[in-house]
Length: 62
Image (cartoon, rainbow, N blue to C red; front, top):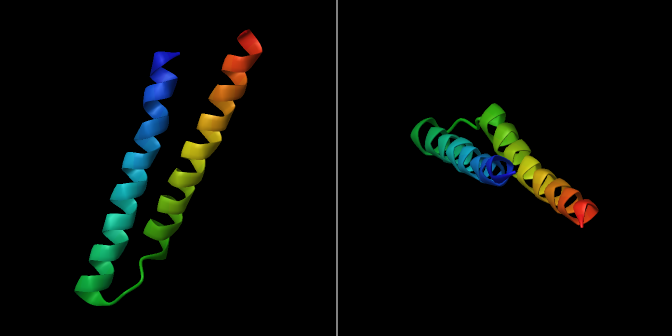
């Protein structure tokens, strides 16, 4: 159970890395890195999805 709580924050770390990658590519070359933006948004979505799922799972056990 503790691992699941830890890994939901890993999604935020990956989101920050992908968004940083997209921003750095844009400032360096002027190109928009759509895959990095898409992966960053997906990681943020997964963080909130996993967080909501964990709360439902904890409430079911009580």
